[in-house]
Amino acid sequence: MDTKKLDLNLLATLEVLLEEKNVSKAAARLHLSQPAVSTQLSRLRDLFNDQLLIPARRGMIPTAKALELRAPLRQALDHVRDTLTTHQSFEPEKADLTVMIASTDYLQSVIGLSIIEAIRKHAPGIKIGLRNLEPYRLDEQFMNGEVDLALMTQEEAPSELRTRHLYDEVYVLIGHKDHPLLSDSMSFEDYLSLKHIVVSLDGGNFLTPHDLALKELGYSRNVVLSVATFLIVPELVAKSNLVALVPKRLVNGRTDLKIVSPPMSSTGFSVGMVWHERTHNHSAHRWVRDVINQIMIA
Image 1 (cartoon, helix red, strand yellow):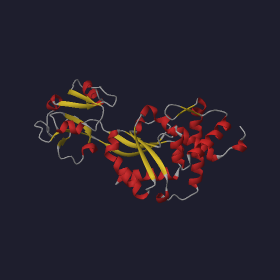
Image 2 (cartoon, one colour):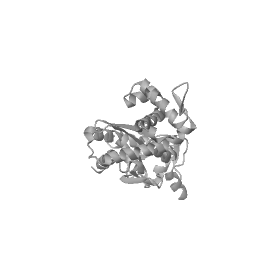
Image 3 (cartoon, helix red, strand yellow):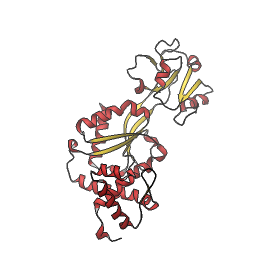
Image 4 (cartoon, helix red, strand yellow):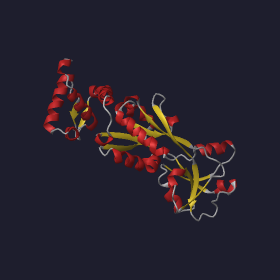
């Protein structure tokens, strides 16, 4: 490759094309005309001696060479961006970037809106993308720039990622507000006999860590329903005689539910921020992490 022909703007265009896989969408993001992006794509093809993106029925498909380039290209451009921003004082009100945050639906529900409001109050040009957490793909997503920050249990994060503790969560037992057996003084036997809902993120599993702990002690509870998300559990419980163990923050302020401590304590979990080295020193991403940390401390 003749590096004299190298144009940083071309590489920035390639980065966006690989993300959008569509010339029109890439042009909109880059604030360029479609013919201008098509011309840049032609120059990129000459530069790398590869088609890079092949027209398909919907959008474009990256070639094997393009897929190989995606991660190192993103890292190289991130280093350039970090170098520029590190030597500038960060001004939130002038920031213009997108931050992709991965988390469970529970966390999107309990703190997602607070994060969005706090960030956009001071930095209206920052766009927040919330996406579902995929723990098994997280390392790859960080490397490819699909995710900038994850909110999750720190112990489940890949060891090479950076983390910061946010808060500790506990479980409470919920039922409809007039449930006759639900109380802080209920017996252990009554607790086991209640009709329980459990949450299995993979779907269809009736044994949670709490049930495994009960099993080791020689007990089992009456589990009648398994669902794939915490978000529908309060509504199911409010309209039936079913009960469920749920994170306390999920039901704070609910007046249509009876909320008690379970007779057998259920191990809670910690929530933290997780991020990759590529954004560690980036001033805008540092600011976003600090804002989230302040929200949780307040």
